[in-house]
Length: 493
Image (cartoon, rainbow, N blue to C red; front, side):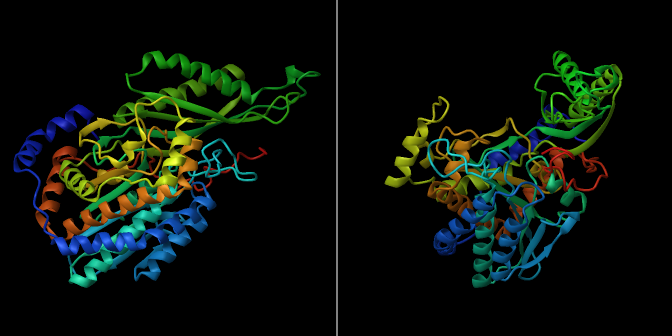
C-alpha cells in the first residue's frame, strides 16, 4: 500500500539527484517539426474554442456527460482515431487511439464534467443562468477540448514524420467526486501506457509537480419514522436528527485526527416539510489527507460517529462510499520536460477585450497578490509541494509515470469552484489558456515518442517512489462506478 509522503520523497532522493545533475535533455524533435506542431494547434484554436464552449453550455455533471463525451468522441473519430466507448462500466468514458506501428504509448487525459449549483453567464458579475443548475467552475470543458486538440496535433505530426508509437486520449468522466479514472485504472486500461500527460485550468501557467490529497467520499443515509411534528412527535424518529448528531460528533472528532486532515460535508436531504418528522435524511462527506492510510483510518472513525448518532436517535444508518482516490505521485523527469515545453510555448496573451473583462472581474475577486500580468508569466518549477484538492489523476500516477501542468484559463486570482471561474470559462481567455495547454501537451508527447531514454528515466523514478512491493488496490474497493452519485436522493425535489 502507499507509504507516507516523507518516505516516498526520501526513497526517490538519490535518483532525483542523478536526474538534476544530468540537467534537462536536449529536445530530440527537430525545430521545424516543433514549429509545425505549434502551428497545427494554433490553426485548430478557433475550433478548440467552439468545442469547449459547447461543453460549457452543456454543463453536464458527473456520469451524466452524454453530450459532452459524444462531442469529444466525434472530434477524435473525425481525426482518424479509433474510439472504444463505455469502458470500465461507465457509459460516458472512452479510450481513443491512433497507432502508427510499435512504439511508446502516450496517454493524454481529458475531463468534461461540471459542478452542480454554479451556473453562470460569461459576464464579470454574478449572473446565474435561469433554468440551469450546473456550471464548469473547474474548467473541464476546455480541459477535454484542449486535450483532444493536442492529440490531434500529435497524430498529424506522427503521420507526417513517420513516427512510430501510439497516442491515446482517455475520456474520463466524473472527476468531481465520482473517481472515474479509478475505475479505468482498476480495469487495467493503463497497464501498457508508457507515460501519461494531463493539464488543468487555473489562474496561472505552471508545470510544477505537486502532491494532491488522498480522498474518500460517501453518503450516510439515515432512516427513521415519520410522524406529525406537533401533534405526535413522540411517535417519530427523526432521520435528520441522526444527521445532525453525527455532524456534531464529527466536528468534535476534528481535534483528535492527524494534522492536515480535511473533513467536509453537505446535507443533501433533510426532509421536505418542518411539520413532518423526516423519516429519511442524507449527508455527503469527504475525508482528505496526503497519506491514504490516514484517510482510511479517519473515514472509519467518521462511520463510528454515524453509528453512534443512529443509536442516540433510534434511527438506522447506511454508508455508501461513492469515491476514493490516492495522493498524486509526482514525476520530476516528466515534470521538468513539461516545464521546458511550457516555457517554449509561453503564457496567455490578453488582447484589449480580454483585459477589459479581466479588469472588471478583478473587482469581483477575493483580495490577491496576483495581477493581470500573471496570465502571461510562467511560474517557477517546484517539486513535491502540496495542493489543497484531490484528483483521480492520482491513481493513474501510481501505475504509469504521470505529469501535469496548469494554464491560465481564468483571470489571475480566481479561485477554482467559483462563479468567477465559470464566467471566465465562457470567454476567449479560457480558450487561449487551452491553446497553451494543448501546445505544451503536444510537444511533450512528441518528445516522449522520440526519446526512449526519457520514458526509461520516468519509469525508473516511478518505481523508486512507489517502492518495489507496491500493488495497486483501489480506494473504492470492488464497488461498481456510482453512476447515480449526482442524482437527487429519492423523495427530494
